[in-house]
Image (cartoon, rainbow, N blue to C red; front, side, top):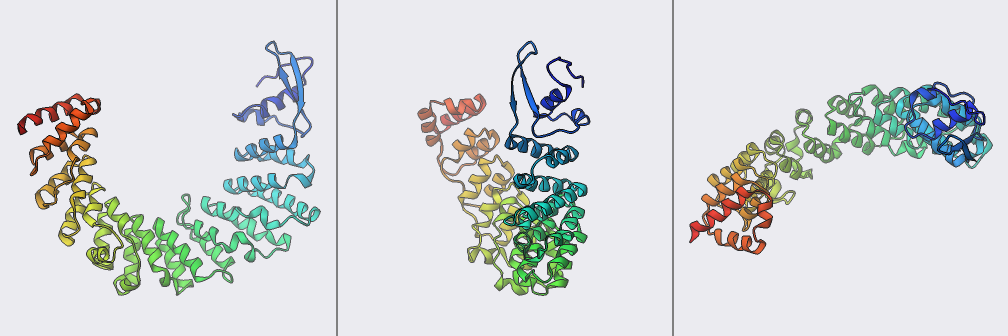
Length: 422
């Protein structure tokens, strides 16, 4: 990038202006950054390039830019800027930089920050070392940055701080997030390391929380490992099962059932099957009914609503057909209404052929307003009750404008059907 050689403006000042005056943070500029200080002047220009006036950046303004640099990974520039600033005023800035470095797994920058924190704590006794790392373990675990997490924890003894008793660790947030890492969902080594570090602090509920998160993403290997180090995890079986069911983790359910048949604990479980039903998780619904507890029994315990009504929302005809066999009493007119409003003609046809509840009043008009022509046509021609007069009344009331907005064909269909009732 070329530098304007104005006689009144030094190249360093112009470079500074371009770097910190641009939110785009162009990569090419940062290769030329040298010896920047917090006292440099940013010039403002008139339209012809003449300097208008100057202002000096305050530390607060520069702190914002440093944090922005950290988020983009320009840690070498960040180091130079921090070394120019008095140590007693940059604690909050260091916290943000530590989190940015941890998220990116930059060990060198983390080491630099550890040194800075060590110096800050020596200068100011009121600063608590662990406050700089309150989010680091959670962030690194979530991002799957095992090396960064290990480097921070292994080096916290520099501050004579008991890492196992610090708030950020005993919360077991890092333990839980290690199992849900979207980057390394099977990072068993990181899980083993965290469990080993906190072995004298973690309680059964901490391991159970981890197992619940592992079930959420289908990490069977991690669940196996946790069961070997905590024999009481089964006390939290409901939570583990719930996460597996809600996230369609059938293999996790099969594994848990193979180790210890779930049906033996059905009386002690509290699970809500609303999620699998509403999402149409057919395999999960079948497993629950056959291996945990019959759906109709769960419904009688009021842990879910009418199962067919819920499944009709999902668009899964297979699930609706299955529930019609195993829990035939769990249907109301709401099922066909929900299917009609979603435009699911196959479920509407199935319910019409195998059920007698019908649909609620106004369903035809509401389906018409949503533009589901095929559903409206089917419901109208297979109706068992007079709905045409109601449709006619609503058309007159709205002057047909709303329905016409969704398509003239739908409007014509309802107008033409009106004459059949006369």
